[in-house]
Image (tube, rainbow, N blue to C red; front, side, top):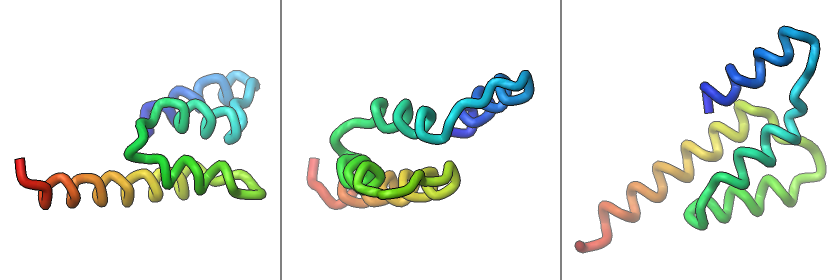
Length: 74
């Protein structure tokens, strides 16, 4: 996420902005079904999500997935 944000900053420094919607769509397309709740929640919003809010939601979901995996017997 941080390297993607930095990658988007480069065109912005040259005067060509990458929209938050485009960046969000790119991120969401790269997620697997474990992040379905985040994907659906972001897509259901009436307004754009900020990069920091999206990062927070993804980190919370990642922790949730890790907790479930630790509880599941091998």
